[in-house]
Amino acid sequence: MKMNKLTTWILLALLAGIGVGYLCHALAPDAAAAKEIAGYFSILTDIFLRMIKMIIAPLVLATLVSGLAGMGDGKAVGRIGGKALGWFLGASLCSLLIGLVMANLLRPGDAISLPLPDVSATTDLKTSSLNLKNFITHVFPKSIFESMANNEILQILIFALFFGIALGKLHDKTALGLVKTCEEIVHVMLQVTDYVMRFAPVGVFAAVASVITIHGLGVLEVYGRYMAYFYLALALLWLVLITAGYCVLGKEVFRLIKLIRGPMLIGFSTASSESAYPKLMEQLEKFGIKDRITGFVLPLGYSFNLDGSMLNTAFVAIFIAQAYGIEMSIGQQVTMLLVLMVSSKGIAGVPRASLVVIAAVLPMFNLPEAGLLLILGIDHFLDMARTVTNVLGNSIATAVVAKWENAIEPVDAALAESDTVLPLASEQQPAALAA
Image (cartoon, rainbow, N blue to C red; front, side):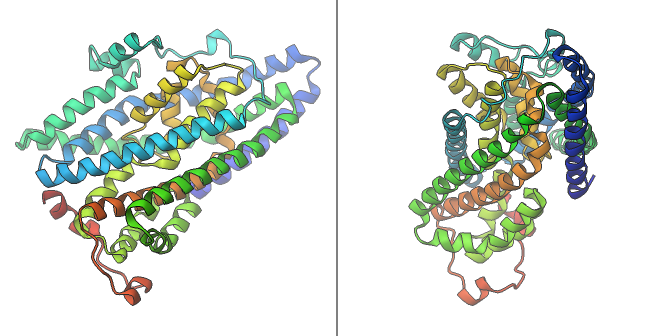
């Protein structure tokens, strides 16, 4: 389903959920009856959540394995990749920290005070103890099949790390065939994800109707406050990213931002980082970045460096905890930050990837998964801002790595400002990866 059609249906479902929920709340004779009516809506939300969890394990495994195997083992790739990943990890950590700090300071979920779901509504995902010893040992899988069956995302990541690097070292036909198979699995799972997201309007309708049936229309003001707080947190992240870019690029960072205004607008209007990708590569080339850097770092960033999505995962997780009145200690929040930083890597191509990451991580911290549907109705507006942030973050990261590699060439100012279509770096990507 095209994004604009899906967004329209989600907005209609949101409005329908508000209307139906208001009627149910007004007509319910008492709170117990309202809760019983809301329980019927929760059937639809449970089905949608199960379908979301259905795609997690195969998607994470196939995406990470194919990505790691495709990096190869050349010295140039290792050097450039190491610098890029170092920047990505630092940017991800900053994004998550800003999300956690702003969610704790602004506390957008306090006004909701939802009751915890019934025990029967909980998932079958295993939760591990949060002490350091059990957490570390639990990360390493005993069996990849057991890990996938239980959707243990960190264990899947560990296996994918070893398997992907091993495939990258081998160059025989069998290894190449396995890599190609994993790439095809990714394409299939993305299509499955598209099918699953077609049910998002149903999940939104049921979630909103259920909440308003119990609490009335007063809960709606939480949505407006949540969006305002989230945009404020993103503005702070922009300031951090631009400042970090200025430390390396100097005043050239402002020329970079001016050049990428077009791709950022495309990303904002479509809420899709992928839609901005071709134009972004063209503009980075106009900035003077050599093809071999753009062709390697930018695709890597699209998998490992989505700063807006990083902030969103932390912000939403704390919001859900606040909405259900669950207090999380500083130690638990720091642990969750580390889990989010690891588990969010590798599934950036998924529509609404943050939703998949949060759905995988919430059970590990005994947070109700149903809470993420509270914001799904306005998620497209949040996604538009996240996408712009992702485009900005990846552009700065690519330029910074190019600066470190002395791979920024002087570009004629008139050419850089023109709309002339330059050869895209993606056309030279195989040669860049082989360098």
